[in-house]
Length: 66
Image (cartoon, rainbow, N blue to C red; front, side, top):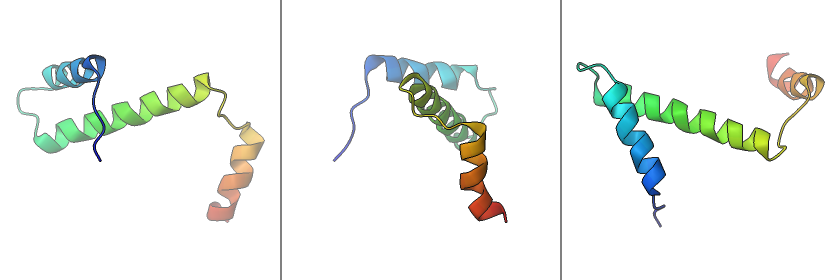
């Protein structure tokens, strides 16, 4: 099963590629797109109220950091 990209998503990918330096590698482009996707997901989560307080985040991370 594959996801279909909207014209806006395709335009954002094309824009990201054009903003890369001429010597950018495929890996550079994939990394930039990955980071952009993660930022967009985070912004959507914030807009939809899926956030944690600082104390909640510390408590969750404490399990891994201690």
